[in-house]
View (spheres, rainbow, N blue to C red):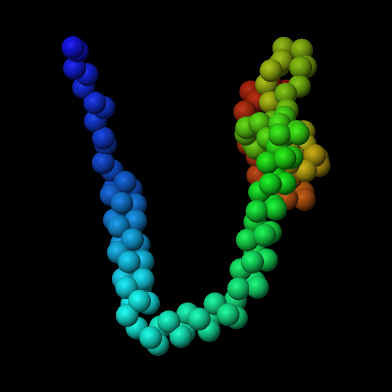
Length: 140
């Protein structure tokens, strides 16, 4: 029988922080439950609050369930719309010897012509985003 070494668990600050926060949430939830069981004033308070917010809670949960179901249906109907594409992807133009290089003639987000700020810096007139061209400098 061959023994395999288990992969080492790497503890980072984030892992420790999430674990500590989850433990604190569980302890506080248990404390709140025990307080509810043994404190009649808290039971009365929870009954009053729940009586006033249950319609909003039901409507919110219904909207959440309906929205999730609609999104899943839409995603199964049109999966090509949900592919991971970087938002900063710029369309490329095939122009002679510069084929495959990104051309910055218009904003990739708004499709509006860019305002030239300097040799290789541009700004969109509508969304005010800045762009830097990676094209080589042309000798004039």
